[in-house]
Amino acid sequence: MFPPWMETAQKLIGTKEYRGSRDNQDILRWAQIVGGWTASYYKRDSIPWCGLFVAYVLIQNGIRPSPEALRAKAWKYNWPDGKSIPEPAFGCLVVFTRRGGGHVGFYVSEDSNYYHILGGNQSDAVNIQRIAKSRAIGFMWPKDSRYDKFYNPGRIRKSFTGKISYNES
Picture 1 (cartoon, rainbow, N blue to C red):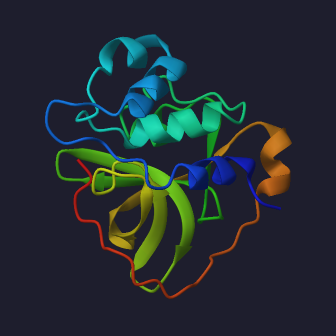
Picture 2: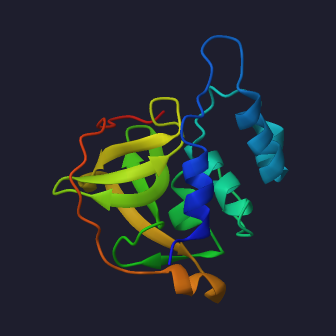
């Protein structure tokens, strides 16, 4: 079965942050929907937004996000409604490390060296990019048993010639 949040995420492919002093109002609206500290802090689309994208997608599907949604690594270390899984599964969150912080997005597939990640703030847009497997620090899935029927462990091997992402800030 197809995790419903992946349909939501796919519909957002192509969303981009704006260059210069203009802001993409859709991205700013996501922060208002996430609410709390995120809504009060997130005022410019130039602020890293990979975690915001994940939070918005999950909220649209009835899943509570990390209370620190903007901190990518919080999805591994502070997501009370998430659980760690031993290997990737289609639609799981993959948390990465990077110089100066982290990155988070949804697992789509992989090749021998890269995970293919549907994420936000990847080259300032929502898209699928390849991210080195060596940067992954965790795989996460919603805890609620309602989502167990979508959990299909097993790696999806595919050839993908998309852009390689080196820094998602």
